[in-house]
Image (cartoon, rainbow, N blue to C red; front, side):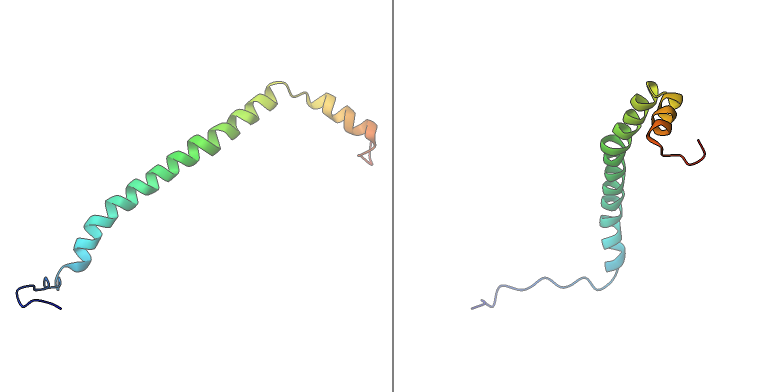
Length: 76
C-alpha cells in the first residue's frame, strides 16, 4: 500500500494563521475592490444616467396637472 520510502510532509505547527492571512488578505482586498467597481459600473452609473435622462425632459407642472385632472388630489 505505502512504501517505506514515501513519507508525508510534516504539518505546519507555527505561524499557520499568519501564513493564511498573508495569502487571503490580498485576495479579499482584490475581490472587494472588484465587486465595488462592478457594482458602480453595472448598477450605479446606468441608474444615474436613467435619472438624468428622465429629469432632462421632466415637467413638474404638466405632471401635476395630469394628476389633478385624474382626481388624485383631495385639496385641488
